[in-house]
Image (cartoon, rainbow, N blue to C red; front, top):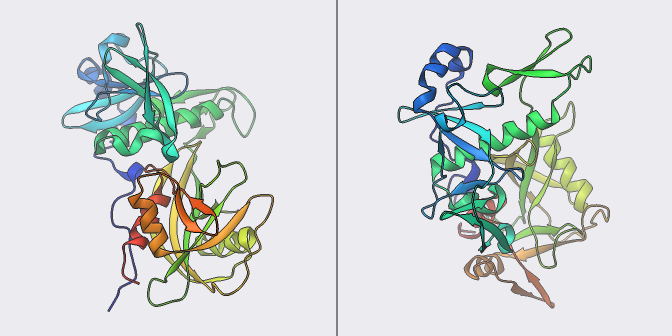
Length: 331
C-alpha cells in the first residue's frame, strides 16, 4: 500500500556542515587568535560570491583583510578546524563574461575572473557542495538583515554590530536586536485520489515569464498558526478549501529574510478555482505524468494540453524538491 509522500532529498539551501559555534560569538580572544588561519567568503555589491569549477566557494585567506577581523566581518562558524567569516569583496582583475543556467533555467551572464565564476545563490545554490551552500546561505541572510537594520526599531538611533555580526546594539540605549527571519508557508496541494493524489495544483504570478508555474506560498501573519496560514493562503489565492495539512520540511530563503515551511494538503479538484487576480494570473490542476515529463525535459517548456506549456521551479527552491518528491511517489 502507498505511503504519504515525503521529501526525497534535503532542500538545496538547507544543506550545511558548518558548526555555527554560538558560544564563540562572545569569545573575541578566541576568534581573533584564530583569525590568521581563517577563511573568508566574499560577497560583492550584488551579493555574488566566487566559486571554483567543482562547485566549491573560492574563499580568501583572512590575513588578506588585515591582522584582525574588520568591523564589518561576520563570523559564520567552524568546519574541519577552520573558522569561516564573511566580508564584502569584489572581483579583482580583468573579467570575462560566461553564460550559465540561472534560476528557472534562464541563461544568465556572470563575470569570470582568474577561473572563478561570480554567481548568485538563487541561481547557483544547487550546484554548490553542502559546506558552501550552508556558508553562502548564512552569509546572505546576515548581510540582508544588517542592510535593513541600521537603525534601532525602538528609538531610531544608529546601531553597531556586536557578537561578530550576530546582533546589534543601538547607540542611544544599548537596545539589542538579533537577526530576523520571516516565516512563510509553501504548500503542495494535491487532489483526493488515493494516498498521494493524481493531480497537483499549480499557479503562476503575473510577473513571472510565460509558462512558469509553482506551488502556492505566503507569509505567516501575526497571531496565526502555520496550519492556519496554509488554509488561509490557499483560499485567498485560488479559492480552494484544503484539509489534511501535513508538514514536509523547511528551507531558508534569504531573499531577503524568509524561511520556507513546506506543507502538503488535499483539495477537491472538481470544484472551480477562483484565482486572486492581484496575485495569481492562472491556477490549474496538472496530472502527475505531466509533472514527471517536465522534470525529464530538463527545464524546457513542457506541453500539458490545451495549448499550455509549463516550466517548474529552479533547483534552489524547496518547491522543486516538493514537486519532484510528489511526482515520483506512488499515487
